Length: 268
Image (cartoon, rainbow, N blue to C red; front, side, top):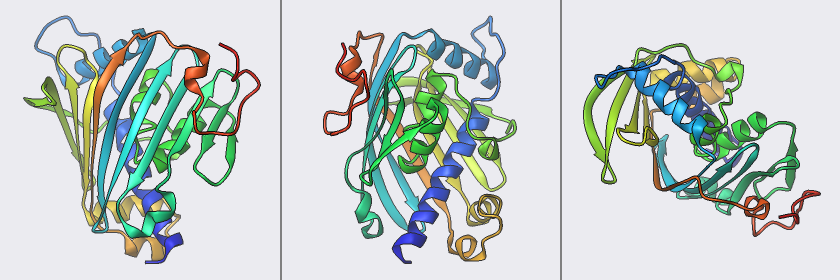
C-alpha cells in the first residue's frame, strides 16, 4: 500500500472511531438511584465534565488497522471557557513514518490552531479544530475534549442510539469502572467510566471487515479502491494520570515546541 493510500485508510479508521464515540455519548437522563442504566451513567458523566473548571491527563491509543499496529501517546489540557492543548505522537508502522513527530491542536484564547508538522492550520472553531485533530490522533483529541466542551462531531460522522448495555464492572488502572457495550453494524464499542469519578478511563472499538467497508462506502462516496483495501480494526484508548481543576495560565495552552504564536499567546 502506498503512502497516500495508507493515509486515507488511517483517516477513515479514525473517523470510524469518532462516529462510534458520538453514539456512545448521545443519551441524557437524570439518575436518582445506585442501580444506574447505561443512559443514566452517560448523563452523570456528561454533567461531571460540564462541572469541571479544568482537566488534564495523559494516555495512549493502540490501534491495529489492516494488520498494522500503531501506538499514539497523548497529553490533554483543558480549561474554561475555550482553552485547550492536546499533543500526540504516533509510533509503529513503517507506512506512517512521516507522521511520527509531535502534533498539536490548541487554543490559548485567541484562535484555534492545528500543527501536524506540515505548517500551521488556523481553524475557524473549536469543534472543527478538535474534530479534525481527532482524525490524526486516533481519536484522542476528540473523545474527552469534545465531551468536556460539550461539542458535537460532524454531521456525517454522527451516529444514532446504538443500544448500550451495562456489563459487569471492571477495573482499569486500579479504577473501578462501569462497563458499557454496544454492538451494531459490524462494530463493538466498549467504554469504561469510573464508578466514583464518572470520567472516561478507557474506550475500545472493534470493527469487522464488513463493518469497516460499509462505513467507508459512506465516507468516501463509494471509492472502490479505498473500500477494498480496508480490513478489521481494533483500537483501545486509555486515559491515565487524570488531574481535575488545576489552575492554569494562558501560556500553558501554547505548545512549547511551536514557533508560531497567536496575538495573546504571550499574555498570562
